[in-house]
Image (tube, rainbow, N blue to C red; front, side):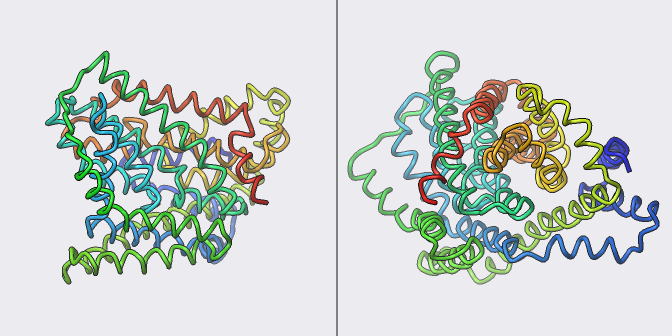
Amino acid sequence: MTLAVGFVGIVALILIGVPVVAALGTVGLAQAWWDGLPLSAAAQSVYHGLDSFTLLAIPLFVLTGEILHRSGAAERLVRFVTMLVGWLPGGLGMSVVASTMLFSGLSGSVNADAAAIGSTMIPPMAKAGYRRPWAAAIVAAASGTGILIPPSITMIVLGTVAQISIRDLFLAALIPAAVVAVAKGVVIYFYAKYVEPTGERVEVTAAALGRAAVSAMLPLGAPVIILGGILAGIFTATEAAAVAVLYAVLLAVGYRSVSRSDWGTILVNAGRISGVVLSLVGVAQLLAFMLAYDQVGVELADWTSQFTGNYLVFVTILMILFWILGALLDGIPALVVLIPLFLPLAAQAGMGELHFAIFSLAVFGISLVTPPLGSASFIVTGLAKIRVVDLIRPMLPFMAVMFATILLLAYVPAFSEWLPSLVR
């Protein structure tokens, strides 16, 4: 199977309405049959792709995010952050970015960030004078940063596929995530000040700020426990996820905000989301197995090796390829297929494994929020009650900021490698 044939087959199936997971599985099985492999070999590749202790962290972090969202923890965080920055021009928009930075550490999912923060913040932004497309663009752009915020599900999958330390990935992503978040905040401030003035007036008093801080203190403990435990070496990412579930349950019980019937809904939602993610990982592993069996990696290496000596061209090819395929395949399947193929080539071009991993994550983060294909763009446009095409123009300044960050990542390795080097 050539890469072009497989890609065309997948895209054609998706365009006629076949779900991504079925499209990937169909192409993988078709190639296994064409190559005369027994179906048991295909099944074993899926099994071995999912037979990972690290991947167990995914359903646990998803469950944590569901519990904390249902318990009102997200609303408490948003309220606190809004009190901190809501009085500035564009303050509500900036609070979306800051809240997403915090909530990403609880949910681990770009789409969960978009749904939780969008449902909470789009209505008050619209009431304050934000045009709904602009409000939706802010939420989408902010959620795109979530892929770089530990414990990002995509980051866990990448670490598993590329056999890179999850702790090192978490550390390497912190500075790029903070920089791109600040840059998005600057864009929001500039637009609110000079382009689209808004009418938000968040009254902040010491007493109100104190109450909001106290209310958000326990939810803020979750990312501290997760990241602190992992970075200190107390527990692995999977163990941290289990601890996070326990902490979230204790918070929900303490707040008394989750009814008995809600627990069933929480478990069903977490199971559905986790099933989708892990199914994508499994069938993507089948596709990766077939690409390796047919030595597509060798062909790709032969073609791409001519560019590894020219760093600018190589990085540009990576960026365009990962951006397009990430949007078409919803990030994780593209990651599972592409990362093992390009990791050795990136090393030849002079990119360290952490450097390449964070660069790839940042590109996939853009693909997930790029209208009209990115999954997060569908979520926020549904919440804002606008068409997906209405999101394209207001997303342009944020896309420019995100691509600028990617260029910074590409040409300044210390941007992603400095922090992990301090704790080795």
